[in-house]
Length: 485
Image (tube, rainbow, N blue to C red):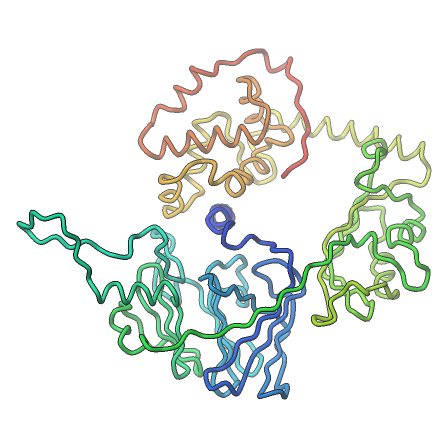
């Protein structure tokens, strides 16, 4: 369980570091083209969704204008941004893809992946590829130096002058690295990491054939031209799956599923929300230009019949004139609505029963030391000790040199969602008694004080409690049940 927390929290911390660079969603579907160095082969990669990174899509490998083979995934490319790199060998048989952040643990989502004739041949994690130990030191796959001056100052002993002298070799290397942290020459790839160490990869075999300081490889690759990447973007279509139209009936998906299940549909914007017991449907998938819908994920809360819903999507054709013909498919993930009992009075009774059960759960959570498998701290000081247990040393170092607001949407979100700040927990009550009821404010208090505690202010929890004494008895407090975010 501890390893699970370490993985999730380290992932959430990394989210904050890359939000500005990745954005997760850029509102466009991308087609990227990369040529081999000999210009005979090329890979054209197209994404079915607007997420970064994503593997939803397909990549076509051409020899001149003839299709050689297809890889059933996309490779996101961000030109002029050191977050990803894609290359194809001079025989067209090998593809290498490097990505700065790995969000999932399967091989296709590792930092470095190599494909041979369309099949995954080799995959490396960050540590495997660079030789770095990211558990104890901060490592990045690609070199960057946004916060450093490009011209180092050299002052010799006894030099009383304030004159700055330039190290020309350093400047030349630095300029090249800032433009091209990854270079390929004669089917050999050179990738320089954040420590300014270069890993050398044989593109044909997929094997690492060398490592060393970038300066030791500089002369061999300094004249290599920058790879040319062509990017074409198309605006993502914003339509919810519940609003898809059946080609035959011209009726909305939400209406037809309601008829199929003998239920009533409630849109998320309806004024009837929370009046009735609602049953949720969640569906994601790909809509093709031919109108077929491929389900990726489907969940349906009992008593909704999941199999009937699945059969409905499989057996119908939907209007799809908004799907980009250049790409052929688009990914959709939102179903904005729920369903209720067709009998209105019964639906209201079901809601009353649900409220009673929710109140029982809330009351139990108020005194529980754990909710699910997550231990709930009982005060601010215990928040610190729990975070110390479940965070990696490298993440603690990141936090020490940061401001709490930088982690509001990563680690802060985990705290809000898992320590019962949206629903009910003993930690929530601890803060409510001291005048804090907003989960966002509570997580900020925790993170800001934790960072100070990491930096040596060991009595800060005690000091905070002295300045925030309980204002009333917990029995008199109203516990709001809020929606997670």
